[in-house]
Amino acid sequence: MLDLEALDAATAGRFAAIALDNIERDYPHKLDHVIGDAGDLCTPRALHPAFHGSFDWHSCVHMHWLLARVRRRFAALPLCRAIDALFDRHFTEAAIAGELAYVARPASASFERPYGWAWLLKLATEVDALAAMRLTSAGEARGSRALNADTWARSLQPLAAAFAARYVEFLPRAHYPVRHGVHANSAFGLAFTIDYARAVGDTTLQTACVTTALDWYARDRDAPAAYEPSGTDFLSPALMEAALMRRVLDSHAFGGWLAAFLPTFVDGQPVRLFEPARVDDRRDPQLVHLDGLNLSRAWCLREIAGALAPGDPRIAVARRAATLHLQAGWDGLVSDDFVGAHWLASFAMLALDA
Image (cartoon, rainbow, N blue to C red):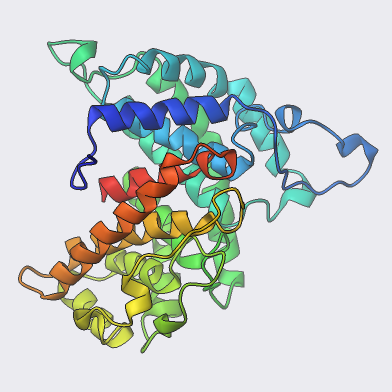
């Protein structure tokens, strides 16, 4: 039975096997690609030398993050050799230069904004952490640094810097947040980007994101959470916003903000926010989003619980709801249909790590 409090080596190995399998699958693929003329008609692998598998670009990026996370936490897994070999192929200067060339196209100015931007920064954060690990006296089997992690981190850095610069340029032009529960959700993008900015010490990026988060969300009251979920959500607009705000407010301020934003949280209300979403058809690529919603809600609820002051009664409410959502989301991982398999394990990892 799944240990809902921690990620064990067996589960990590299962996640890694899923990620390795779908990253190496070129097809089916759904391109986010503006075609200007016949010369732009290329295969995903030609357009994206590093991130061409896993059905779409952003899923490929966050499946690479999943592998980096597993590699850092479970360095003794047999699959770590395969992870290293994959990273050696995909995190080269040439491959990342190809990705940079793609995003430099005028037609790609808004490519993957903000979801793919945020996941790329999340990946860069994890690979940087992997590179920073120190060898132990017990060697590789005890969790040492991957041999080529420094190279991977250096290769990824220009692409991460490009998306960080795009965020700094874009945010002053974005006067309103996107609040729905799919890819364009602004709170999701800001949360991962703040984490990246703090990890690398990018104060310009951090200031831009924190200032924007406070401007967009600090005065929010009485979130209409009873309307959740929408039929294709994989993020909860309300809980994702709260997970962002715990990054920019201290524990006391966050507790007060949450009381105004979700005033009936302590009662587990509204019910539809605290009970898992129902998924009947996991072959449908839109309906299976709701498995992701259950997993991302578990992640956000655990983050909220961890940010509240000790003794706050909302901690128990959040933890109980997180467990229910993680159990429900786990059912989606049982299915091996590619429409869910190409991305859901990443959100399960977020929930287990929170």
